[in-house]
Amino acid sequence: LSPSPSPPLSSGSSSLIYHSTFNTHPVAIKTIKTLATLDSTLDRDFMKKLLQEYITECYVLHQLQYSSYVVKLYGWVERWGEGEGRGIVEEWMGGGSLYEVMG
Image: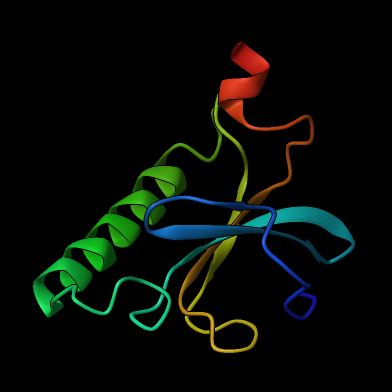
């Protein structure tokens, strides 16, 4: 996995999306925002919920990895880049967000 690139390409309420490479394949890395990145008033229960959602997403993508309707899961990382937390490494799908493509 290449080192953390400059700014994220996209940001959600609890995640950041980066473009990177894995074994010469372009990939998207979805990282969970850290407590420092999120609103500092959030509590540990919220972070536990985010972690559980991350684990569930990894599990579901792993179960569906041979489906032609789901992006390929390359794996997940426990620590990546400068201070970034856990991340899901998925097939890179260029062309913008799903919302933009469907729109």
